[in-house]
Amino acid sequence: MPIGRVTQIVDCRESAGMGKGGALAQRGTISECRYPDVIIVGMSPGRRHVTKPVCDITSALRAQGVEYSISTMILNAGSGIPPDAPKSAGHVLGAYFGLNEKEITQINRHKVAVLHHGNVRSHVVNKVRSILKDCDIAAVVVCQAPIDYEDFAKEGVKTALVMPTDENVRTKGTVMAIVSGITRGQTPSREKISEVIHEVMKLMKTSNMER
Image 1 (cartoon, rainbow, N blue to C red):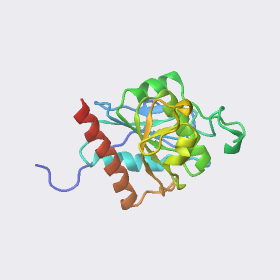
Image 2: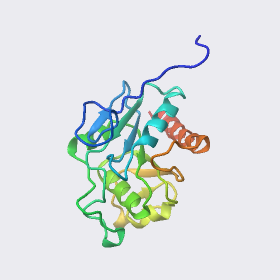
Image 3: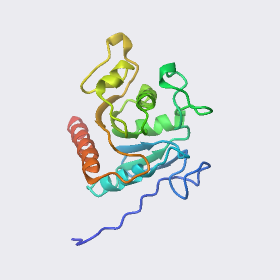
């Protein structure tokens, strides 16, 4: 029986990567696990989008006993907004958000996705919609800006508490929980980490009961 601290290595990549982001969490990479249960999805690193909260969340979840069932993915095109986002969402020059077929397949292998998408409310909503449009998965949205379920439902995203009208449903996946107040580029507080862990573990328990 181990006593004291347990050392963990969180390797946020499958290869060297081509984008910015330092030695680990770089664009277009995934650190896969033995059992594909939970996947943490982060934005592409750059001057404004940093991936730090993703590794903190991954470490915290692994410390709760799900060490071998968490993957970490840093999107290849995780900056900007989807090309089909409304004009009211704004525009990021030279950057369009989107998933490739490989990323969609990798996410769909899991049961729960933790989606981290920064601080701009309209960007977060449209990025989540773009992911869940192709990925049939239960999602926990982690962001800095305050967002509610109605914000997602208005854009056709299915959620646990508010559903869009039948003719406006645009997603296969569902937003099951939202944890706001996690600042990009900074280590989340214990309270926020606990919120994320609680929501993920609750969804994991539900998915295991349904199997």
